[in-house]
Amino acid sequence: MKCILVAEDNEDDFRLLLRGFEKAALTHKLVHVCNGKIAWDYLLGQPPFSDRHRHPFPDLLLLDPRMPALDGFELLRLLKSHPELSRLPVVVLSSSLVDEYKQTAKRLGAREYLIKPMDLDKYRVLALGLHQRWLAKVSPSP
Amino acid sequence: MEKPGDLEAEIKDLKARLAEAEQTLNAIRTGEVDALVVSGSEGDQVFTLKGAEMPYRILVEEMNQGALIIIPDGTIVYANTRFAALAKTPLEQVISSSWQQFFPPDKHPQLEACFKTAAPLGPLGELSLLAADGSSCPVQLSLRTMRASGVEGFSVVVTDLTERKQSENALRKTSEELLEKNGALEAFSYTISHDMRSPLRAMQGFVSILLEEYGSKLEPEAKVHLERIQSSAHRLDRLINDVLAYAKLSGGQQEVETFDLDKMMRDMVETYPNLSDPHIEIVPSSARVKGHEVALGQCVSNLLGNALKFVPFGRIPSVKVWTESIKGRLRLWVQDNGIGILPKDQLKIFDVFSRVHTNEAYEGTGLGLSMVKKAVEKMGGQVGVNSELGHGSRFWIELESA
Image 1 (cartoon, each protein chain N blue to C red):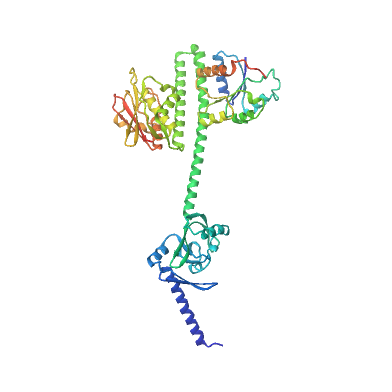
Image 2: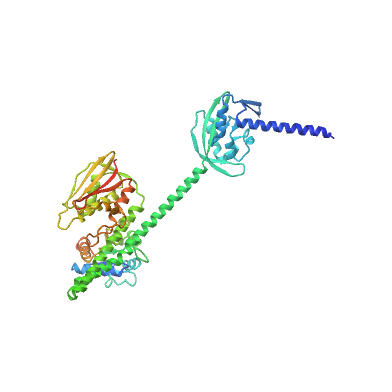
């Protein structure tokens, strides 16, 4: 079982993503934080996330580009300049089809830029794809 | 003590000399004088302008540019009224004064260097002309050495750039405003795509959950209602996407580029996998056209989507795409075996939100063809259709060949 940190300000979108993983029969732990600032604290293990047993370091970060407090692109910028966190795979999950956002995400080091699906079955397919590309292989946990 | 009679005589004499001076000035202005005397360190110098015939002088006097003749020591020996007006200095003061006072000191070395070179000089860069009242105006100079009838010097034509500068500034302001509006539109598009699609995704997602996981517990009619919500949400999603695409096509400034039609078609089929359909035959073409590649790809995909969609129930679609050269232009044809279009509807279908069929018969947003028309016209092209009800349609896009 792997851990995925989901930085997403929309509760509905997180629930649907969770359903996608359930439907794909995947049992990864999905941790939901609702802005980039909390995600950053979580990744650094700062309070209230200092206990790594209860708040494990994620194997993958799913990021919504637009969030309050600290948005996805700003978080990507911070991650990129951090010596260790820059290795964490990040997939941007956006509802925008605007090409500039995709380019920005890629430039800031996101591994993938995916569009949020519009139906449940596609969430299942998305979860399967994420699993195969980023979580199925054995990777060393920090 | 002078006698009143002497004073009267002196006044009379002064008046006569003033009248004479005015006449001389007027004569210079209108070209009736052929010589000018300038007092210098080596005594009076006489400059004759025999070659300059009166009509030419009148021409110079009347033209909309300032004109000067400067002799090598820097003295202005001729100026037209336009120059005097630009310099806001009386003409009689301009003549016999030095050119330096009319141009900014930091430009003097550059101008002196020009005056020293013997070769004819083309237009100089822009600089300021200093007027007597302390104001200045942007001008451009055109210099030429001249040697005529014993006069050696330079002719200088001074073009007032004030108006050009004003229109340049106005143009720059307009284009900045346009860029700003364009940016605002892009931001608006992004907000729409994000903010409007999010709640919609939730509606679709949770309706799916209800149908899949609680469907068996629901009464059939409740299920039908949920399915109706689902299909409406799906339609709204398509509408939002089309509005966005339309806004993007009609709002952005697009550079016209030259590109390979075949490559565009290949890229298009790659972008829209549903178009790699066995019922579509694309005749290869080596043509190159002028337009906007991405936008044209979207247009052709819209036409192909329609060709596959508007087919009578039970008929297998058959779509053919080919090109034809017409007098330096290239026409791209998309032919289908679909339901066809009545003559009265053939113009209407290119209007925004115009639909011939109900949504129950053929799903759509009424934006596809208006998008095609808008985009193609932005590339300097045209669109049209030949069709007969029940016998298929032939849509065409015509662009300039490259």
